[in-house]
Amino acid sequence: MSQSIKQLKKQLVGAACAVLMSAVALSSATYAWYVANSTVKATSSTISATTNGFILQIDELKNGAQHGGEQTSLAAAIQGGKITPSSTDDLKNWFVCQGWGSDGKVSSYSQINLKQGGKSGEYEAGGETHYAYLKSEFIVYTITESGMADVYLEGSDGEPVVVTTHGAPTTDTIPNSLRVGITTQTIDANGNLTGDETLKVVYAPAAVSPTERGNDKNAIAGWSCVKDAASGPQTPSYQHIEKGNCTGWLANKVGDDYQVDAGTRKIASRVGYDGIAVRIYIWMEGTDADCVNNAAAEDLATYDVTVKLAGVATS
Image (cartoon, rainbow, N blue to C red):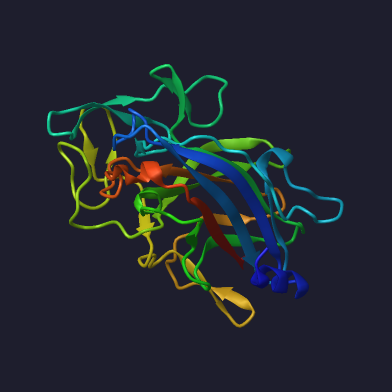
């Protein structure tokens, strides 16, 4: 736990930390955008939240809001699996590359048929198990019935999403092509999920090049994704931000409180006693310009992904 989180707990300014310790292999097999046959390991890690004047808790979604006892829901661990580079525009329909031209460029795509009853993102291809993404599920809630908070990405201590490298990386292919998607879904008073899961924003931990292109026959520069098997890379329809460019999305700490400018985009509105489901999706964007270097096959480093949220009290 970071020193800042320890200090917040000590000061009784609501602090919560849910930790996702997922040992993941980012597999670059035949179905990856770059061609190699080895695997590399990664770790997806922390999600944390703070708020003004009352405690905002985070726990695993399956545990529900932990009311009526000691507030110990400060951490959660979820195991992940392999991740093969993939692409999506909505976190519902996922695609991988299927064929290459004589120039080595990706020329065709196929939609992933996720395995029924399998782990999140799991699918079969070429007789092997692959994972298109890693998903972790949390519940964010307040411990008092009177407290309400709007939840934002936290921008006071560097970037709201941070990738930390462990070991000796041989390439920056993996962290530079990562995407982190954040979704929410409402929860009723009985702890049941209601309504649709809503994609709020996708974050790139490394700035996306406005000029470089990926390893696709019809690659485009800048942010890109595959929306359907026939069309190839297109500009995504989802809201997206990146390292160094999160204007309009961040809450910043001023003194002991968090403040936001008018018009700042929220991750969630009026989060209270019943809580809200927050899901974090992590994947390697296959159409990214950085997802073309098969040097990643030799990279034995691991990577922690930290997502930081802040709550601003509201009525």
